[in-house]
Length: 444
Image 1 (cartoon, one colour):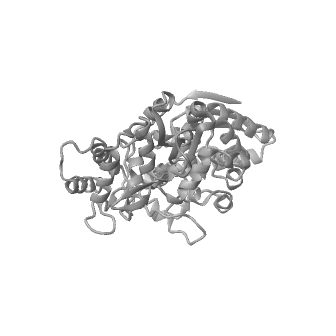
Image 2 (tube, rainbow, N blue to C red; image 1 turned 120 degrees about the vertical axis):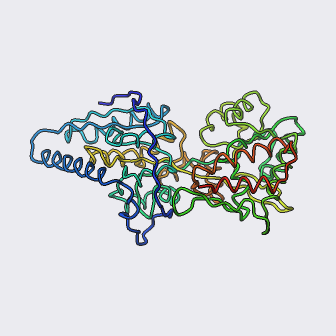
Image 3 (spheres, helix red, strand yellow; image 1 turned 90 degrees about the vertical axis):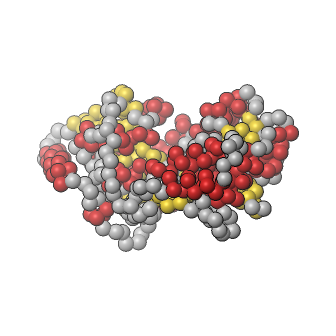
């Protein structure tokens, strides 16, 4: 039986200062996970042991009983996934019918804030939950996740970047669900050829000629990474897992920080450019004022409904910086499935997690939600390969990097980029602005 409710947990944010080493988790020797999880308190450990002992006893009782044990599980996920997850849970119950008396509840809990809500009360949290990969490190460090038991098998079944996203400190802590959290270029084929969309200069020229717009969100540091990511300038997370490093203000090198800033000012000066949020992008698509823009697969269906056969999708274009053509970069990410280490039915929760990420259910997720599979076979299916948005995302993946930045990254970059979008109206020195941004990004 599947019950669907809204999550009742408001969640308190648990602040943790944990040192993490961010690497992929291949077959190499893994670091000591006891050191990685050293900030989990002794009290939490005692509680966890108690829960495990209780769970082990239940499993033992089940084995020694001729009757099916009742298995109660709570699953958290997005509102938009409700219908999909009902189908997946129903098929899971059918597959394991006779082995347990299932009572599985699906509760709506946004993936973006899953970590904060879960860490507000681990023992009261969901048994199985969907979350964005940039929350993995904090969840693992807090003891909310245990290493995946079938990690070696799962690694061989999923895309390399999705596996990397599911790992922290060399250990796999979650189950890969999607490999589509990135961005690329949408364009209207009534205005652009495939050759045109290779160059941002050309896109802006054509948009201006038709009194239309290319739109990109410079109020989001997530998108602004596109200009810095492939220049040799660096920004990312330090080994402490909290603070950032940033060289976006570098004064030497082939590409300097001021070169990127000037390139952004040149772009914003074009009458064919518009700075706008994802919602504004879709509004522009609908009223025909936007003929190209940067977004992700979540808008594929909506854009297709507006542009029909004229919808095109491609990797991000090159832009001109310091007289050179620079391929625009992107942040990438994945959705993951986590199993609560405090689950009273941990074995069944793991079975359900593996069921959710199976090849067939990832194909179903693509059919119903248009989300790109992390499963290798599912991602290679004809249906997925024929999706223009997924094909563009795969093409862009060669120039993408996993989003691994601390919380101090976002606001300073947004402030800087917003001023560039406005054309630097105050005329403040660009190097001074870059230095301020970098300093704030690296603040402790």
